[in-house]
Length: 368
Image 1 (tube, rainbow, N blue to C red):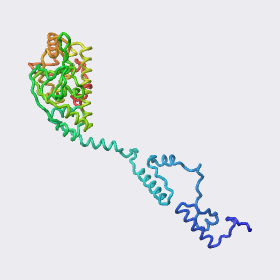
Image 2 (cartoon, rainbow, N blue to C red; image 1 turned 90 degrees about the horizontal axis):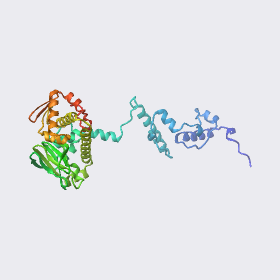
Image 3 (cartoon, helix red, strand yellow; image 1 turned 60 degrees about the vertical axis):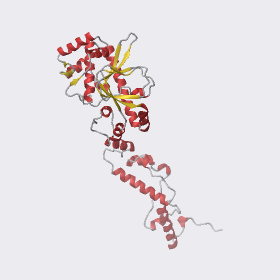
Image 4 (cartoon, rainbow, N blue to C red; image 1 turned 135 degrees about the vertical axis):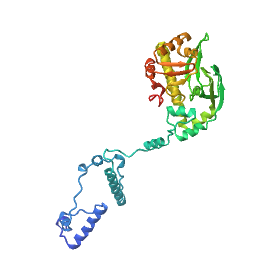
């Protein structure tokens, strides 16, 4: 049997050259390595195809993507078919074109979360509502138009109370929570010998017993400190809204957390500050909270709170409260006439009360 002549030593006839040219073109177009032509054969076809580099010398995808600035998620998926290879090349070209069109600072395309946040921010209601409940929640959180529509749909049962009248008492099992529409409400605790301690003041827009929606028994008494108008909301209706709308539940939860922050500040005020600083601090708090609701302007307020209520809130006697108020007036910080209160020197009153409105978590508190 005659030995086969190596391909390199074969004579390059016209038919042989055409055949190898066809196979080479097919290999170059479709990636199928059907033949390995000698350099002499390819040179006679007028072009030279550079052989592929060994695998250990090829550039990895990570180095290539880092060089052109692509992310790993943009890597086109390989396909064994010729159509898949062409799609792979097209996707790579599109990815490189997108990379070249990026801003010079390298800002990536916005992720879906930021798009959702921007969409939500565009739907925010920037005009304060005349509804006191909605306005209070607007001061402490971001409300969208849909949130406002849901809150406006909560049915309210309005009731009026005289001064020093109990609204709900300690030990009650209420089925409603109430929002202060007008007036001033206080949460109180009684000691064994009948002494009263006011633990917080509530102004229009506040929901004093919002925690009662989840607590079966109240552990304090809510009383009207002046003539008050309240709106009562059923617990079952509020629970149903919170279960269907997570944003409303989060807003109510934030309101309860702010009430807890106010309690902590009151404990510090009564426990560690002197009488003069206590009085200045509580007056600053009332002014800021009433101003955020649009009840007062220019540091002038109608505070229908008695000196006895201030004494129970600050842990002082009524005589001591009267002396402290006189000292604040002598120092030119405040001016009082009946129930009318004017903070003449607001900056001085803030310094005297060691007041920092951060714990109120209100938007208008820092610009007041």
